[in-house]
Amino acid sequence: KTDNGVGLYVTPAPKLEEGEHMSIVLLQVRGVNKLSDQMDDIFSTTVAKVAQFYSGYNGEVFRGGRYTRGYFFRSPQEAVCFGMVVQVALMAVPWPDLSEFPPTERNIQGNLIYKGPRVAILVHKSETIVVGLNTNVNSESPPKSHKSLKSLLGRSASDKVSAAGSEQKSGNTTRDSDQTPPGVSGTFTTRRSFKFKSLTMKKAMLAQNRKSFETHAYSGEGVTQASTLVKFVFGGQVVITEAVWREVQERLPRLTQVVSLGLIQVPGIEEPQHLMEISAPGISERVFLDLEANILEPGYRQSPSIDSHLVIMFAKAEPCPLEMYPKENHVELEALHREAIVLWADLVRDLLKQFDGYECKEPDPGNFTLAFMTLEDAMAFCTTAQERMTK
Image 1: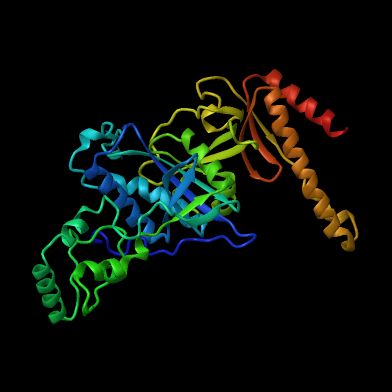
Image 2 (image 1 turned 180 degrees about the horizontal axis):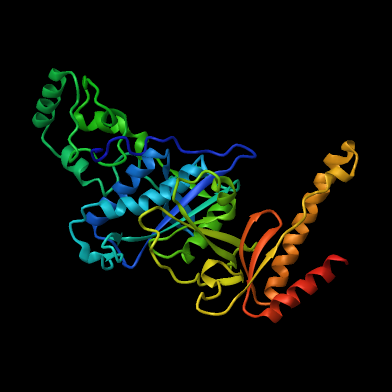
């Protein structure tokens, strides 16, 4: 168990060098207008503890003249794991009052699938993120939510000196979780001896922790895209963008459930976005509606019903026939074959829209499992595809 305030915000703020990418995770609570101060403190501390394990930095996201909270990671894999673990960790919290949140839900076996706040989580990766110091934070005083620190600083001078003396006698500072707020670093992040000399307790703490109240703000096109996309995420859902999916698809934790949400067009973002939903084991039975966006290519939830008659088709691209050509031409032939596979995949997805088809999966590049509602649509797809490939 980690005491409140231990090690939180110890990760240095990620900064982008030229050509590098950064992963951003945005969290938004759904289903309630505003959390009470007590619930907000519990929520923030729980999320911060999970971020600590995955080297996440809690920074300010600046967009539209307003600041919201986001977490930033060097590794997209750590960002994805953070998002999945947060959804599970929030259910394990002993919330003092669940009446603030939507009702707790269990599956047919009686296992929890929802408890506590419904949090929408979006994971994005971009190289167009601008990092700067958040000048809105007053480094001379703790944040308002740190009531326990204010209480500690308000004690009398004699109390402060006696407290310091008793701690020095043992050679270590014994931090109490009620006395140390999340985010305080310096003296209070580890058990260590300290001397006050001529400084009062208050001045010493502020001098040691002045930098801990300085946070970094993040902006730029990458932040704008993430802020736009998170609006389409439902509470309890973790959605990742295609840039993140390409990095983590072979390195996800075992038993992670992955669902394609299709290719969508979002107002405010020029390029269509291919989004994926991921779920940790144990909460994969959560049910969500279709995204409220313009779906250009159907995802899992737009698949044909299993109660209706379907035509299943397997479309397979032939491998590159290297054995028919001299060895010195193999590299060039393989490059041309990869280009041809990309063109074939684009043709398949274009014709699926025309003939009301559905892409079940593409286990290997160019090899598709497709579904159609009628045999006529399937045959029309085949003949049109053959004709288009000759042009």
